[in-house]
Amino acid sequence: MKKVLSLIIALTLLLSAMAAASCGETTGPAETTPAPAADSNPVSGQTTEAPDDGMVKNNVPDDLKFPGQTVRFMYWNDVERPEFFVENESGEPVNDAIYTRNIHVEEQLGIKLDWIGTPGNYGNQAAFVTTAQNNINAGGTDTYDFFCGYSMTAPTLAVKGLTKALGEYPIIDLELPWWPESLVSKATINGKTFFVSGDISTNVLYMMYGVFFNKSVYENVHRGKENIYEVVKNKEWTIDKLVELSEGVYEDLNNNNVSDYGDRFGFQSIDLHFDAFYIGAGLTNIVIDEAGNLVISPDFEGETAIDLAEKVCNFLFKSGNAYGSGTTSKDSSAAAFSRGEALFAMDRVYIASGTLKNSDVEYGLIPVPMYNTDQENYVSCMAFPFTFYSMSTATTQGEAAAATLEDMAYESYMLISPALFDQSMKSRYSSEANDAQMYDLIHDTICFELGRIFTTELDNLSYSVWRNCIKSNQGSHWKTLASMNAKKINKLLEGPNAVFNP
Image (cartoon, rainbow, N blue to C red; front, top):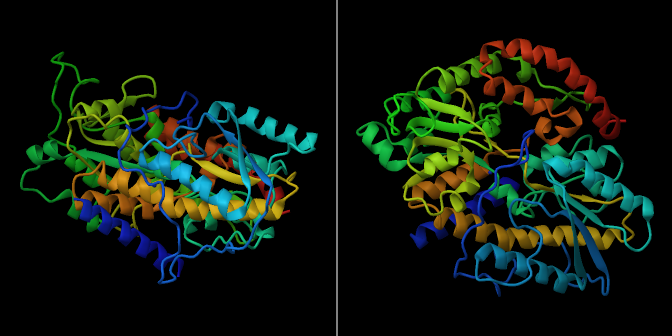
């Protein structure tokens, strides 16, 4: 039923779009992108009544009230995109949807939402966890009900015993569509779910990975060849196809007789984004075994990963058709793409509302390529800067807190996601129906991979081994690198396993 609900909502959004015409994740700083410009299409005043067809319903009873109670959230205030609250309506759809969401929740439950910010991005994870720990230890009337943190933080809070299993509260119904099945199925280990995300986090939609392509360059270079959208729809969009279509694009734009940044390439990306190749190939880092333990995935040392690593490195550093030496602080692939210096660029979808907002490039968006045509479907990697919501063990009002979380997720599903996904992404930043379909495809294939969820507990080895292998052009050594780190990772998994499978 849940898949049917999601399909109906996706179809509704798509029809709406046609009618109107899925970071601090490295050892360095996160890439930042300017916020979207204001839009004159506010959503304040929208209602969130369930449709008469009964397909979407909120489990929070209309008469459930907690008058005079304040629900307190500790949130990471260095979040990359607005998510938690805004002071006023501005006329920009997502801003006003957040504003309206919070008012609706307060009115529905008779409560007050209190947001207390503290730094918590990649570089501030430890400080965020310490602040949470100190708050719990202090007790009293100022304890937080929720910790809303950077995705890497929530598992650490759980492992340290600072958060509650949400299954204690039946009003939080993880079968409903605002809690993505792709996340719930991974975050629920041996029946315990300590953190959730989904429509409640705007950054889930902002941080999906995709591949942008320059429509005019594609037409000029590949005139008469297959339509790229049909390639995707026919599930022929693979690493090999990306390599093939990137040929014949290179041009020495800066006229220095050197293949370097500033020239036009078939493909550009930076080290920050190399993880998306691994996840996009359908590979995993961590899985759950029959005993309910987190263990290293067979994919990690498997033949597909070995072949993929060498193939990607050859493409990026030896083919002459790609540029992969950029970093978060130098040689931005997003900026290069915005200037027309790449046919393809792999990045988070939010650059459509940031770096590409004022670009003259007519572009489209397609998924990260599959490993080969035998792969069942595309897989959209999630970048790390989204929010997990966890309930503090120190909350003294669990029922009110649980009802608030469920109602916030529902209101986000009804208000914020349509404003962001449909108005701001599929309609505002795409030029045709095919692009809207691609956004849907990327969204519907989001992957919340266990190794990425627990990466801080794994000393970041669950992504950094791959990323650094590609960055240093060591693809031919992946088997050795994977084997060297597999034992370390399994040892580090003892901590999470002690909590989730004692």
